[in-house]
Length: 291
Length: 321
Image (cartoon, rainbow over all chains, first blue to last red; front, side, top):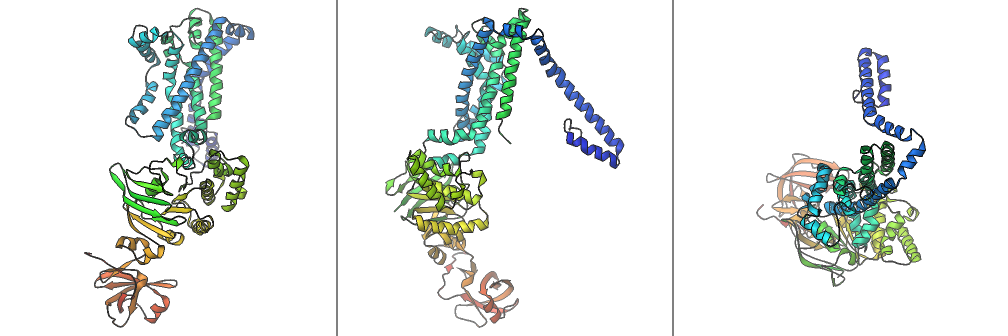
């Protein structure tokens, strides 16, 4: 207990009481080891997380707010913002609809292949985003049968918004499903059956009973999905073709500016992404289901 | 007939839960489906409600074939053992749910809901959420919610099963009185024979997915169709190869026609009644007598007595036992 209590202040109080009652030496070494562990944990996070982010923020605002605003209002940056938002919103919308549907299927229905569906939903956790991007190019690229056919209908997938949305949908797929499934399980289906016997149709039951029941879990999943979509780099990098002012998202913009020695713009956009992440993180804190 | 169930069969996987079940429920009656757990009584109730589909057989409600109708269209009220309260709605909105779905005018809904809340003594709880109610209050709310849509039949699945003994007894009496007031055809599932006998006017005994007997409470208690029903509805003991209720055993010190010799092994006083444990032909049996009888006969361990079923009492001959 004592060894693992790195940030638990209550254990500190009990140890002071213990020292006064006798076994001073033993509690002394325990106290020291606790402080050592605490220093290691804080130091680890400091060098891994706090320092890099702080450096970016310091570099961004080192010369005041002016350069930051200027860098983010360049036409390329604004375009990258727009592309990021369009891709993220589409991906969130599709994943929300699919996520709720898949969760309902997995929890409320029995069908052959149910375990397979469950496994497929978790697949994006295991597959590297770059692999996802390459796979999408293989299937929807101009020189594949499917991609060629779609292109002959005037629908370009790869190096265009649809491909980026597909890639983002794929990587963020499990987030809504996995947030909603446990809550649906806990909710049970008796309330839904009661609504049916009271004359509600399936759709009315979903709107009036199921949806309010999973509301907070769904919001939590949607925000997680949004954060993942805004920050996605690998899969989008592969399928977008990184065309400046066309298919460049904010993460791709950061990378491209940095490679071209335009550090102020790279840092400004990075800070903007970090701020978005912090906001979504705060939202998830607010929305996280109680208990 | 309010409900006619004909030749219903239902299996979960390879396990049969209902086997050729046919039951008639008269309009305005209060019927208990009684049986041990796993006997198929809850499944039968859910088949009537449309929450389960029978593999074969038909269900008619108020003369209409409802076998293929969804629960939404059957106009039944269903009350679940664990209340199935809509947790995100107030008591008022819970009860109003069925009426809102039916798009009734607002003031009509308000009037009807308040009427029902008064009926179930929850008029002061209208603005509370289910989590703020006790188990008994939640179940009364669920009952009001089911009654709000004026169902053809009211179905209750172990309605008092999740409540403690005291509340259970209160609600039983209350349900009986409510039924006398509202007169809606009611079917409830229970595994408690005392509950069935006290509340219902018709008892359907189900075991292993088949109907064992249908009758009035006194009918199934006094004239059980088979040893299973007799054992399930009350205490039994065995003397002279027959199954007898322990309170239907006559003990005497003198031999009597049709009696057997027995020796008393133990006498247990339980307040007014006395439980006499006996050995008849080397088999254990017991009889229930009043304190007065026990004292008059001076029953004590080791005494030799004569026992026989009270003349006129129902006993079942056990074959091959």
